[in-house]
Amino acid sequence: MYLRSVCVALLAGCTFVACGTGGAPNSGGGPTLQAIQITSSATMILLGASAQLTATGSFSDGNTKDITNMVEWNASPIGVATIKSSGLLTARKVGNATVQATSGSVHGIATVSITARTPAFLFVGGKKARPWRRTESTH
Image (cartoon, rainbow, N blue to C red; front, top):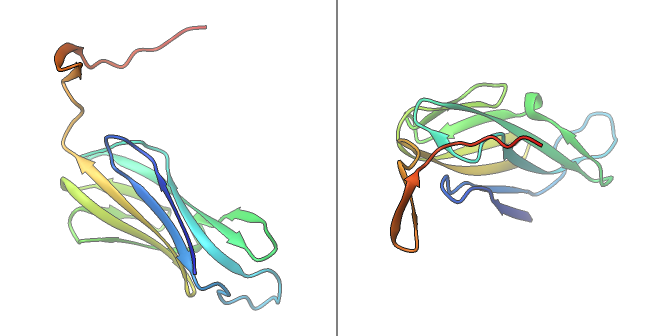
């Protein structure tokens, strides 16, 4: 079994895992799907927000391909998050959601943490620092 995990976000606590036994159905006799890796466009998913998930397939010939629209998506437990067939995840309730992308006998799994809001203050060395603000840099 192929197993791979990647920690994506400090605050979101996302863990992405791809696994499978290989050999997903392939009527053409070409390369077979060996694993699915799920990645996210967001590092933190806030309650009510959406994030695009992408499923990347690894094939027996060593190539990879975006298979986001070719997999079956599922999110559980029910009510924490919903996911469309396009891989668009919407956070419905604070907590953890397990997202699965499946093609044949191969699947990828992502555990996504949904938070209520961004921190109001950043604590550095035990002291409250300036309010948390997004800044843009110009070069």
